[in-house]
Length: 175
Image (tube, rainbow, N blue to C red):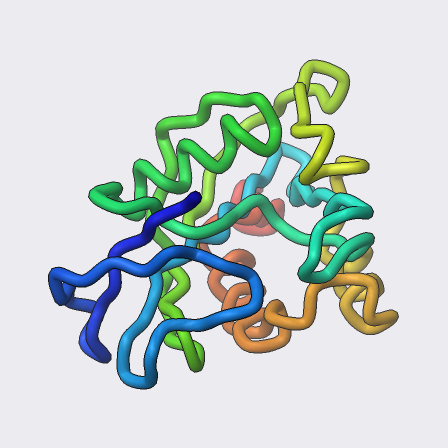
């Protein structure tokens, strides 16, 4: 049983918890906290994973690492834990990128840099069926073909702009 803290519409903890279930959401005006973790390598590729076949929400869809923040856990601690649980890697030098509110939760987006070899990952057999590095264009193609979880459409263009401005190695600027 997973227990998560609840927050008000200003993303302040409200001293209430919620048993996380796939079929129920918190009461209106109360929100869970989730994280998405975007990993980028020196080739400006993003690490994505295909969700497990037996998962109740979006099986067989591509996604970034992420999930719900546990009770008494910070957003950063949750992001680090999700990377460990889902991919078997420990990346602690994550940088906070942005946060947004959806109907039943807040989502904090973290970004990290690593050049890890996919063969060195130890993915969760239940949650992850495939992992790969993709270019921005390949990611866009997956999104356009509806092969990526739909929540990405809420903030992808903002993320792409921030990624290109702040994280992608711009060869023109380095010359």
